[in-house]
Length: 96
Image (cartoon, rainbow, N blue to C red; front, side):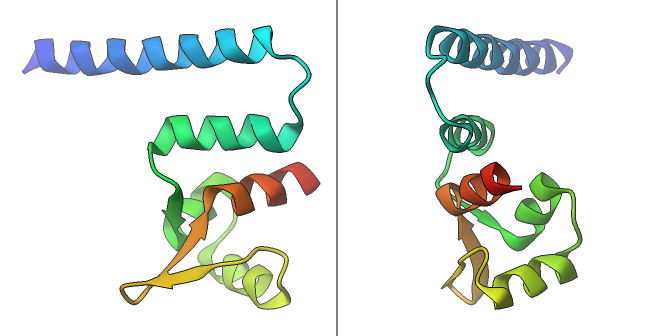
């Protein structure tokens, strides 16, 4: 079990090293592109739940709902759950 934890941590460290290398080698990327790459690397999928989005933006879920209602960040409903496209989150982060 300890070995599995060590392997998982090493895999995560390797991913962050490759991301850091990519960012250093591509300095012309916009903030939005950086945030998109970071979020895709972290979650390995294209959408986040409301809880995950709130965590990434360091705000409450109630604040997420207020922002969503103003149209500043667009959401979708998938199987009854509100989700946010990673590109929408990255766009919002880049504009903050």
